[in-house]
Image (cartoon, rainbow, N blue to C red; front, side):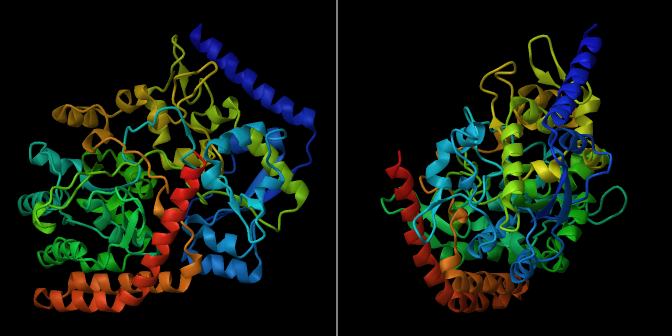
Length: 559
């Protein structure tokens, strides 16, 4: 009887959606879409895109990033080759500063778009800016970070030092908190297990350096110093002026790259890591031979981690560790780990509507987003179709069978059954469902308490039990309070774009050289690097100090 009821409810939803499309009699349109990340084209029979077409009369032509992001955006800007929906990825400021996006406040207001307005209103001070004429502007509604309710921290979605679970299991599940403990464990594991069961040699530590993902090379220092992600600066939140400094050229940074230099000469880091592109890096992680790396979980979870899951290589999947410097690196100081930050809107990340999209089509997009912020559509995007992709138990809890959950980890299945290429960059609800029929459930499948532990594979359940943990975020400290300025990587660097570009270019070129240098040459090469980067670092540091303080004052003044 339960199965029949679920099937009838699913059918009723489909009929309602289809009837809506017929009733509205919308003229069919196709939206061109650019995503500032690599991706795969959805399948032609994708059921969610079919629902969107039936309800809104909208189909999509997706273009995914292939090659260098800044070069790709530069060509689009030069040719004014703008899609209707434009996601500039981590270089969204380029398309904003070059006038490629429309002001969404021309279409969004409390009366006409109440859901969208309620979505952004709590973070207006961070999201709405002023143009050169002093007008309020909003070019992008954040694709992530506008969450409802108490912050959910079940896993580390952002930066961390990652290590394969089998390495921790091999050493009887130790607590690893410092840089030296981490590399000591990897060294010992490889000494005892130089190859996997197929004879492939293990790689101790990978470093991705390509394009904007060079954060894998640059950012670890700030985290080892006990701070969450502020991009390329270290900020002392205990000071009234939020003392801000570039960290890559400071004495405390030297210790990290000295450690990498030592590990390189021990053979734990391969020369290939500094020339790998993203696809090669993901392929290497997907093989199960890379024991550790610094990265952000979202950067590989849907690709390498999903591939390992699909292949049944659960012991080769990763745990996020919040490492800090050993006291010897920082004059005997004990550093407290803070990798998880307070809930943060992903400012200037997500879809904007380009100036090449006319008024009528732009309004269709905004109206579609407005409707898609309804509970019904958010459940479709996050959970799928009830009875087919998930079920509701007798207590009103959203849940999945083992097979349904496995589907969500399968990349091929997702191309047929999820609308990620569109939804990932669109406005969305996150956090807890605050009211209605499913109040108290989580919007995102991966945050639902029943899913977090209940749908784990047996290997993971057993692994966590050895630590006495119930979720992966238990390996790091709870989130700290978000600083008033947010996270400094979101600040627009364009006023010092030349110096910032030079600052990054020196790091990208010199740091791999320093890591691979003969150990006898390390100190001299480090000193030369600090001298070379000093001019651009000085300008960038001064700019960021002023910008961080300004952002903090703007938010504090609106509280």
